[in-house]
Every structure is written in structure tokens, then in C-alpha cells.
Image 1 (spheres, chains in turn yellow, purple):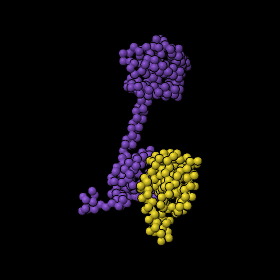
Image 2: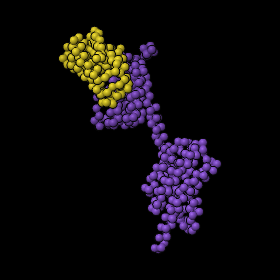
Image 3: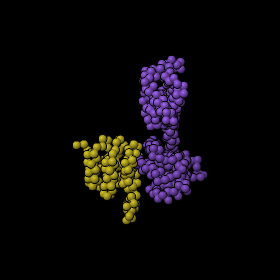
Image 4: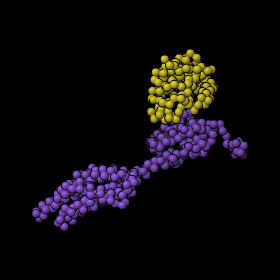
Length: 133
Length: 297
């Protein structure tokens, strides 16, 4: 059974999807990822989908789910490298992936994660600081 | 009176019967006349094609002629003829025939038919009557062929209008990391698609973090246009770029609020300058008065 590797790097988890993202694989990724977030206590998840050229509503939902699941476990999710055609398809399918953050490339994604995290730490003493993020 | 009526009917069916009887004859005569014509464009259509096309037309016309349809060139009995004519007119236009040549083609059929009637009907007054009827019907066909030709042209023009709309959605890089899209004209769904594609490709190419959609050239913003704008903004967000909508004129602000459109999820500015300022702020850039030459370099 194919598996998408999840790399653990400091406070973050890195996922690079470099194969055809079929349904079963996506479901496995979802489970693996939440388990790993739990195990490592990661604060951020970065998913690189720059080589994914085909999406459907299921993939969109899986990505959105991952974002929301990570959020309830106190981790931010950034999806990076989405291709224009993929973005248009998702929008046409009516999925704006509101629970996720998006960035153009891995570099920007890491930057975004770090800034989210430092914001969180700064406002950690404010009770409703996290709900704003 | 009564005898007159009967006589007229007899004549009318007479012409139809003659044409029906001489169908083959008419076709042969017509084709041979055309082939003898020095202006024949055998460079555009082979003689076999011409023959089969002409055969289709002659049979369609003669088959649909009856006592009633011969009086009325708009009769539904001619639907098939009009279909044949439309196909013929379009195919000839595509092959490069001028409208005049297509018109002449149908006129020459009329001439052949009139010639046959002339040979068959000896009584001058009934010949005149039949000529008049046939002429009217055939002229209607010629006009129909012109109409189709013009319709074809109009379709081309419409397509070109669409193409112009496609071209007129530029994506401009106003600063490192900042894109501007001046949208001019109404934003319908096909245009939104083009704008979206251009914007997303621009974001990838220039690695921009902020895109400014300037809608000062959009005449009206209704709920559909707003929905298209929001779609574009969300697509850009998926690419990791933030969108600012600028150029919101007072009238647009009024309609947006009156229609109850929710633009809260989008950053909006009244002018492009305001949007640019906001973008500079996000990118932590500063534009100052005196230090302008050094700080901007």
C-alpha cells in the first residue's frame, strides 16, 4: 500500500504529494497526518501539492478536513504550490477551502507558518486570541 | 366567375405538374448552363460537387411546391428548401464564393425554370401568371440565401467581440509582488474565467503576494458580477495571494449595499492608489516624499 511520507521538522510537519492523489491514498493521508500531529505535537502542517494537476471535490474535501482537524488539534495548515488550473477547478466546485491557509511556494508557506505561530505565542495570554486565527 | 376559378386552379397545378415532370430536365439544363458559363468557379468547387448540390436544391424546391406553397414563399412547406439553402449558402461562403455569386447561382436556376415553363405553356396570359409566381418564390429563396450569408458574418463578428474581450484583460505588475488587473467592461462568467486564468498565471509567474482588481471600468456591479469577483478573489487566495478590490465608485457602493451583497470577506478600496498603499503596507514597503529616489531604488 502506497503511503505519502510525512516529514517531521522541528515544530512542523511537511507533506509533499508527488504521486497521483487517488481517493484511498488521500484517506490514509488524513488519518496518518492527524496521528502524527498528535504524536509529535506539531504546531504547523505544510502540504505541497505543486505536482498535483487533477483534483475533484473529494480531494478538496480531504484537504479542507485536514485543515480543520489540524486546527482542532491546535496546528495551522498551509497548502502550498497549488496550480492555477487546480485553483480554478476548486473554486468552480464551490470549495474555497476556508479552513486552510494557502501560499505560493514552500518558502512562502514556511514564512506564513512561522508568522502564524509567533502571532499565536504573542497573543497566547489573550483568551480569545486563538479563535481569531 | 366559377369557370374562372376552376381555370386558375388548373393553370396553377399545370405549372407544378410541368416542373415535376421536367425535374431531371431542369437539373440537367441548369447544370449544363452553369458549366458553360465562362465565370464558373471550378477552382472553388468540383463539378461533381456542384452537380450534387444543385440536384439537392432542385429536388427540394420542386418537391415542396404545391398549390398553396407556390403563393407564399414563407410557407412552412419550404422549410426543407430553406435548410438546404442555408447549408448551401454557408458552405459556399466558406469556400470563398462572394454573395453575388451565390445569388447568381439561384437566379440562374430561376431562369432555367422559366425557360422550361416558356417551352411548355403556350398560352401567353397563363405563362405570365406562372412566371410571376415562380419568380416570387425563387426571389424569396435568393433573399433567404443572402440572409444566411449575413447571419454567418454576424456570428463571426460576435466571436470577434468575444476575442477582443479576452485580449482586454491585462495583468500588470505594478511592483515587485504586486499585480494589478484593470477590468474594463462587464464581467460575465466567460470573462471571469479569462480574468481568473490570467491572474493566477500572473501570480505564478511573478510570485506576487497581492493582486489588485480594479473595477473602475466596470459599468455596473450586480450580484452576479459580485459573485464573479468573489470567485476570483477566492481562487487567488488558494494560490496564496491576497486580493484587494479597488475602484469602487459611489454608485457601485450604493448598488452593492442595496442589493445586500456581502463583500466583507474582501478588502475593498475606493481608488487604485488606496489599494497600492495597502499593498505596500502589507509588504512592509514605504513610500516617502523626500527620500523617494533612494528609498524606491
